Image 1 (spheres, one colour):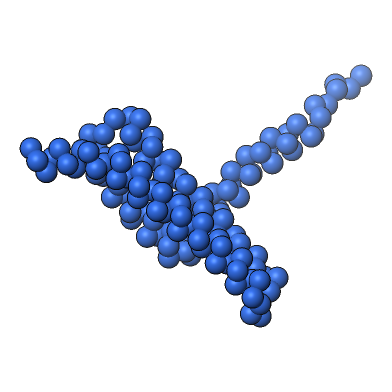
Image 2 (tube, one colour):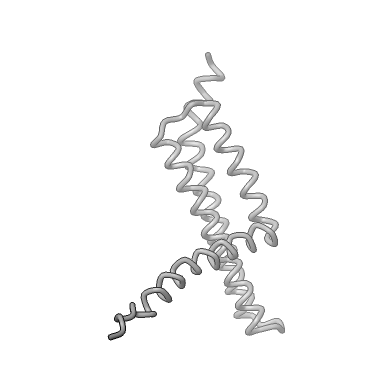
Length: 133
């Protein structure tokens, strides 16, 4: 008698799951490598984290800073997706394509403004205390 074989689907499903991480990291790397604004956001994020370390902000305050940073990166990546899809489907100028790109860019701007506000609320009191010590 032959031994029963394990279903191949389980192995395939697991490798698909692990492979998904490769695709996700490829997308992150693409954004970091090709998008100027993502590079700017990385620099600003590093400055915000460094300020948090120097000012010794709390874990909850760091969490708020990281949520703000991640929110900007997510909107920037969706903006990139929208721009690439619009360019793919509408290589020539079209007013609706312009609106789609403008709205996506507006979402990034709004997210960045929110991040600045969060940064001011989190880091501001610490900076104020250092300035008037």
